Length: 303
Image (cartoon, rainbow, N blue to C red; front, top):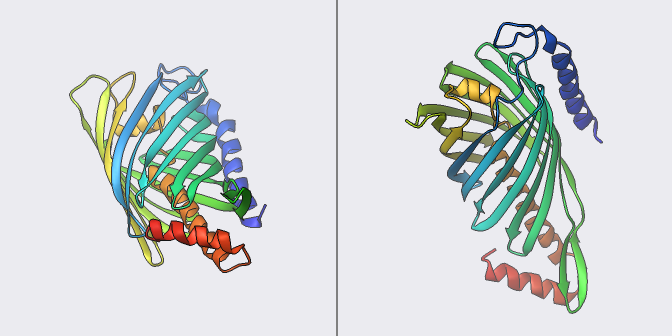
């Protein structure tokens, strides 16, 4: 593990220890001492969105269900599916976390990400720690971990060739949210993946749906890296145990700490990894038959 990875994970763990050690100072909704529930009953959200990354189109839809585990812990099950650069992708993940809505949140994230490429199916995984601290109308949140991939192989003439071995990249995302109003959130932050730093910005504006215990919001997120700007936005629907404002849903129900744009950025990394290593394979000592096969696939997919 690199010193950068160790430092980031240590900071998140330290915050989690600090937050949990101070949980007993919070008051419950009825005024008696004790932490409030980590998840205010079974709830969920779903969204659809579109945008552009690296000059290529993105379409996606996703959903999340939050489940209380006792009073102090919660579990989130999430899924995302869509297309990036005309290639389909899918992701399924789980978040296990401790949370006190008056203090913050600390947990672990595990995601599976699979994407179709010009050369076949490519699978990857994302593992990370996450943390958030709530203070007034501000939320400071972040995650740090690693993204890795399954070896990528091509079978030709009865033989299987490994074109890409397992590779691991450090990933990080930190953001500061400010709720200008209870239903209007503004965000700025920073992300790092695949040796690329990016500044991020976003907003979410929520409106009542007219249906009991639900809420609709419009959201957008953008990242700005050297030579590349990504923009992503869409419509989100929340459903829970009672009517709530956006700030309360984010802190008491489900929390969208791992935005779809981050998942799609990992998909983009996997796609670029395939393309880069295929180019290397074409320039290496791979058998001529393999090179011809790769070139035919490239031509068929316009790469």
